[in-house]
Image 1 (cartoon, rainbow, N blue to C red):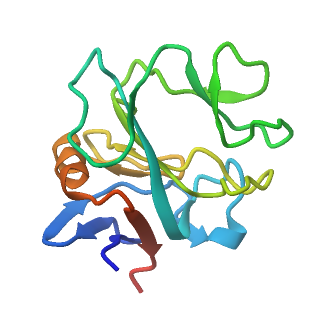
Image 2: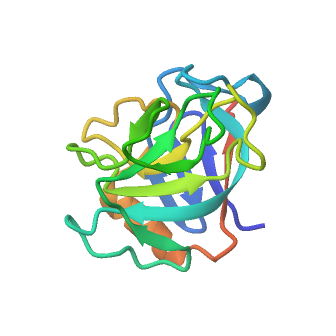
Length: 170
């Protein structure tokens, strides 16, 4: 198994690569304890499903994973009562959602992790992504975040069946 390994002390490792990363402001918690809005990064193993990127800000990442350019109409449903919970949606969308087209740069590259998606269980957490870190590596809402250069280097070497293991450093 050649998974990406993310440790709860804020490091991502894959092969010979090692990078600092930001994790959720709610720390890490077992996947079974993850809840919508808790800010925690879920421990567990997640397949990398899809990459979205801002074509107006950068070229498509070099990768073997599926890649799609974002548009201002892209969103992600985070309403546990909605049938599209934890799914990509097109905006405008009536239920609660996150806009993927942001003014800041954290979603210039988004890698969708296969957390709570097969099928989604309402309230068990949505929009768990690998995305870009803020310059100060401040905490995320539950995602894993890397510097742009680190994320691009990682994506360039991943196989099509890439997965991420988020584990406790203890």
